Each structure stands twice: as structure tokens, then as C-alpha cells.
Length: 575
Image (tube, rainbow, N blue to C red; front, side):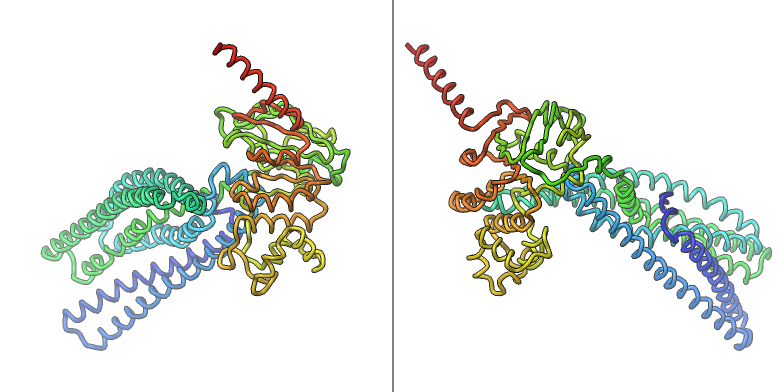
């Protein structure tokens, strides 16, 4: 239940020492509470003076208050530490996500990353708060109570000592079944999260295609899978809780029966017998409390394992191999026999050979799923190739996840991200210190001036999320304005930037983008062939392989020649 990596946390030893001390005092308070309660009841039963009973009740009240205050202090103590630890984990996770970038989200899914940062860290906080308190309660309180019971009546102490591991054995058996189920369901839960996030991200496209209503069945199925997943785990949790309550209640009943026989036979007086009977439930209470929160701590342990595995994951090796000045007309990028696989199965990209020089404009065309976006991700260093040779200016590299390379390019995806910030800060994301004059010029060049004029606060209007929403074309223009403000980046990677735009918007955007492509090395993935008139070179991809490449006019001429030859053959066959 306790991950050994917990002990590497800063300040954890001091926290545990403080927790041990408070738990020990709490155990003594429980003992005092039981003893003075028994004394007060016996005094009342025997009709002794009220002063004797009052003092016992007063001591009982003090012990009770101390016990409850310690519960509150322990929870506050661990809650504060849990908040600090989780915040530390959050910062480390964000740093790791930033360092690994899309490599991580591609491997594990966006839903998993969001869940780990959100609900996952919440479960980790519960794990800290619940587990350590419950474990130390279980490790200290029952044994101090047992020592006192042994002191009063060793036979009852021996029975409680022997029954404890039997109850734990049943609990472990059910707990292992619960853990196995929880592990499986946690993996299923992460898969459901990925599906749900993908469904939400795809809703605008589905709505445009008129498929949003029919896709509601998919959302319903995901919800039902989640409900069934939760109920399967809850069934085991309820069964284990019932079994534990049954055995502990039965054990206390057995103790009460033997105490009753001892009282009837005169082998024991009322005060020690009543003290044992009052302390017996307290002996089992830490185990029952641990059982109640066991399944919550299982979720927390699974989440903590994911968090720590992510944090301890090594960064991308050799990120500083490349020493690269600004990209110029003489610079050269070469990919030779490069391959890439998402898994150990069939490679997604196979034997890719590309040589790009200077300010060449290269189109990457092919049907959906042909590998265009994957190739761009490899060129951008977001994915690391599994085989092949890469070089920039004759410097051989293991991959393109190089800081000097990634500071050279600008990447525009199909749907640029608009931050919950002012339009001005969205535009100046890469160049926050530019002048207002340069911002106005970039806004005009990107074709955003009419849009800005309509905004109530102009460039100071809040955008994205809870702010003003933008259309696909407006988002692309904002991304272009970002590009225009950062004149140092001479390599442009476009991943079908107009794929979700209507024809008129795409045409307007094309007129804006065409002048920007000059004096840049451009990789432009698209399946819309009218962009080829802006390109110098074309890579035609099919099933992860470059099947043709060359200048656009030559490829079109070869295609037309092949079609004419095919027509001639068909005519000959028909005659």
C-alpha cells in the first residue's frame, strides 16, 4: 500500500515523526477514555459518592476531547502537507509534459494527461491524507490497547491477538481481489477518459457534418461503461467491508461472552471486565477505518504510481547535440532511410528520404492516414524516429528534438490554440516585447484588422475558453499574426492549416499566407492540391512511404502522361 518512493519526498521523515507522536498520544487518550468510562459506570452501578463519579466523568471528558482534537490536528497536519506535496507534483508534471511535449500525449492520450493532472492528483492528495494516518493508527493504537488488555486479563488479550491476523487474512484476500479489479478498472477508466476527451474535441466537426445527434449514442456508451466500471469495483468494496464488520463484531461478541462467564464464576470483577469490553471495539476500530478507506487509497496509489512514473521518466536524450545558427539560404536538412513506429508493430513511416535546402517550399500530400502529420511531427522533433540518419548542415543527429532546431521553426496545426487571454497577448505569444506599431502591422498583414475593429475592446478583448470565441479562419489568422511578429523563425511547419475551412475563407487565407512563405523553409502538409502552385517541391505519401517526389509541374506532367497512356491502352483493349 505504501510506495517506497514516498520516503524520498522532501520533509517526509519529519512529518512521519510528528504523526507517530500524535498517534501515540491519541492511543493513550483512547485508553484513558475507556478506563474512566468503565470507572464512572461501575461507580454509578455500585452507588458510590457522586464526587468519585464526577471526577471519573471529568477525566473521561478530557480524554475524549484530547482524542478528538488529535484527530482534527492530524487531518489538518496531513492535509497541509498533502497540498504542498501535490502542488510539487503538479509543477513537476507540468515541467515533464512541457519537456516531452506531444510525444507523451500521443503515447498516452490527451484524456489521460488531463485526468492525471486533475482527478489523478486529487486522488494522490486523498492518498496522503488517508493512508499515512490510517496506517499509523493501525500500527500503534491496537497494540497499546492490547498491551493494557494483556495486563488486565491475558486470556482475553491472547484471543484478541490471535483473531487479529485471521481478520486481516480475510481482508487481504478480498483486498487483493479489489486491488486486481481496481487496477484493471483504472486502466479502463483512463481509456474511457481518452475516448471522452476525443469525443468532446470532435464535437464541433461532428456538428458541422450534422452528425452530433447520432454521436450522442457514443457518449451514452462511454457513460454506461464508466457506470459499470464503477459498480464492479463498488461490489467488491461493499463485500469486503461487510466481511470485516461481521468478523470484528463476532470477535467482540465472543470476548463479551467469555467475560460474562468469568463474571458469573467470580474469576473477574466488574471494573476490569467492563474496561476490556469498552476497549475491544477500539482495538478493531483502526482496522475498520483502514478498510473503509482502502479502496480510496487504492485509487490514490494507482494515481501516485502514474504520477511518479511520469515524473521519473527520463527526458529526451541528446537534446543539445545540435549547434545551429539562424537558418539561411545555404542551410540543409537531410533525412535518410528514416522510419518511425508508434508501437512495436508495423512502422508508420518507412524509409523516408528527404533533402531540404535553404528557403525551399515543400508540399507533403496524400490521403488521410498516409503519414503526413506524423512526418511533420518527426521533422518538428515531437516524435523520435526508430531508425535512419538525420543531419542538419552535415551535423548527424539522433533525432530532431533539438533546442536549437525547435527554436528555429513555427508550427501551425489544423486548429491553433487560442489561450484564455487578450487578443494582444495571444498574438504576441512568441514575441511579448514587440511594439504596438509592429502588432498593428502584423494584424493588418494577417487580415485581422476587420475582426479587431468589431471587438468591443479591440486588441484588449479576452479570447478563448470563457472569453470571446473565434472561428477556424480567425484562429488561423491569429496564428499567422504570431508568426509575423517573430521574424527570427525561418522554418515553417504547416499541418493542413485550412483543412476545416470553407472554400471562401481558405481562398482569403491563402492570399494572406502566400507572401509569408517567401524567405522560409516550408513544409506544408495538405490534401488540397491548389496549394501546389505555391510550392517548389512535392512529396507524395501513401501508407507511410514517399511514393513520388519532385517539382509540382513535373509530377503533374508525369501524371497527365500516365493518364493519357492509360486511356490509349483502354481504347486499344475496347477495339
